[in-house]
Length: 252
Image 1 (cartoon, helix red, strand yellow):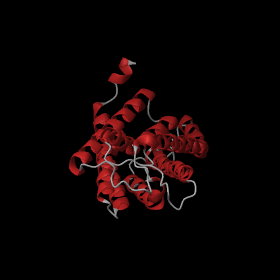
Image 2 (cartoon, rainbow, N blue to C red):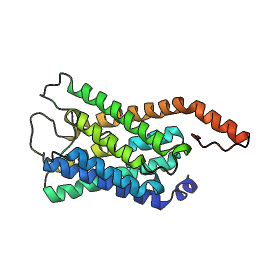
Image 3 (tube, helix red, strand yellow):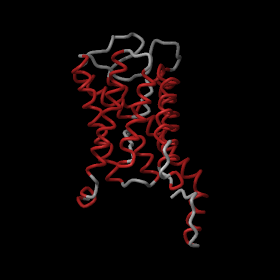
Image 4 (tube, rainbow, N blue to C red):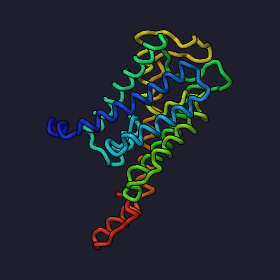
């Protein structure tokens, strides 16, 4: 195991920390400021961060994406564990920074006392569905041989998050990323200063589990769906490789 750990490039972990930090810090600033253009801001910073670090670490910045890539078979188990630990550390650091600036905290939770009859179930469903979408976009645009060197993957992923935030932001907070839910929850649990004591949202740490469960379900299903959808392409690529034919449509 020590040999496997020593083989993990430090540059990968540094990029994962940087990208996750900027993402979660941007989320925190937008939430605490009550910015009406939060979805655009968050989608844009994610897009820029992916273009910054995609060629180094794969620019996961999200434990759910890391798990999807792990199930896809494009990252080792030990490296995936370190990716997730670094992402959570970066999320915590970003929320500490936002607490230092605003002297307030927040935590994602279903919108209770609202128009939604089953807020927890609705939030979990939306998180799972849109995490499935996000991980599917990542897997199809950033992990296949046929898409190597493309210049649109960051834009596609950023717009996926932007669209998701507009669609389900009021319902679940649109984490679609366990790190986005975990850092704020830890800081909220430690310092406990609610953003506005809003009666429509239980802004505390007790709902962080929902984002882990729902988002991981979406991520794993996305990886299974990807493997099923591309199995014929992968077989064609292997057959072409055995025949000595260059296959530009490879999905390896």
